[in-house]
Amino acid sequence: MATMNFVESVLIALASLRANRLRSLLTLLGVVIGVTTVITVVSFISGLNNYVETKIFNLGPDVFIVSRASQVITSLDEFLESQKRKMVTMDDLAAVRAGCTSCRAVGATFQSNATVKYGRDFLSQTPVFNYTQEMMMMRGMDLGAGRGITDYDVEHSRPICVIGTEVAETLFAGVDPIGKTLQVADQEFEIVGVGVKQGSSLGTSLDKWVALPISVGLKMFGSRRSVQIYGKARTERQLNEAEDQARLVLRIRRHVPYGAKDDFAISGNQTFLDLWASISRAFFAVTIGIASISLVVGGIVVMNIMLVSVTERTREIGVRKALGARRRDIMLQFLIESATLSLVGGLIGIALGSAVALTVASFTPLPAVIKWWAIALAIFVSTGVGLFFGIYPANKAANLDPIVALRYE
Image (cartoon, rainbow, N blue to C red; front, top):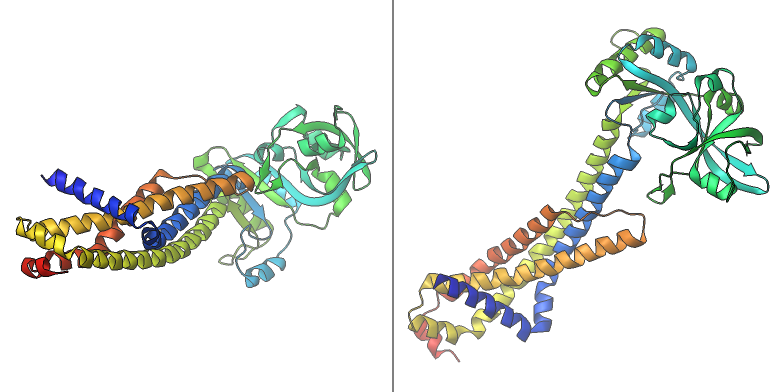
């Protein structure tokens, strides 16, 4: 009997939706907008989280970076303070290499930009990575052909380079670039290697680059610049130990007094991920606040429509009570109807939110991932909204006097 009452209440709610399509659409609009917003935002944040972890901050859990300024600067004062610090130099690199016994590899790099040419073809504003031998491995830049930069290239400042696939495909279309001469900032370099295709990151190509020996880069772009030192711990568990060793070496070498702050910064993968997590959490919280307003408005509209439904069906309620329906039966019927209305709005919102997220992801670089927990949460919340805002109308219907209700016209 309870199952029949439940099914009957659901069918009555669906029939009401079909009979008054426009009214039903306007009734559910608030719930639809709220759920659509939540699903869309959660999809984008989830997609960006995956993207950030795999393609942007992909240093690995055993790598740390020593630099003049923090990789994550959150205030103007912090930036100005960092500009007063000593530069991180190649001598600092040598000291860390000698003193970090928990490091499997230690290298250095700095980045610049230049125009690269081959014949009459050129690419402007091409990132130039100036590397020691270890850096391509630590930056996860695998080779598709040729070789990478060696210690011999760095020690003897050899005019060689490794290029990304976009440079190879644009300037050397249909030609094997290995052994060819590439002009970087009007200086000639022999191409010895080509990287593996990496795709793009939020619309920015990861394959448009040239890598030079760092010794050559310092001569070309100026030696009075700060480099970044990358350290790779022997194991992930030894990362903190390796960072401490590098910190101690540099504090001694740079004469930092005991108790004073470091005049350099040490960052790791987690530094970037923590920053992104805090940004995404704040964005998600704001979005949830906006969506909650939509859901509350939608819930109020559902309550209003249910009150109208109680008024329209007053005589029906009187007949049901006269035939033996109990107060809780009437209340349950209207609660199920209001929950069904909101649930339908939630399902529409889930479909719209998923469609918006996937459509945007298909036509833009913005990634999106549909999470099942977000769908389950949307169903739960939309149903909950219907139940909460349906209590007052259901209670009003349950408390109607059957004799008064039967006389209602």
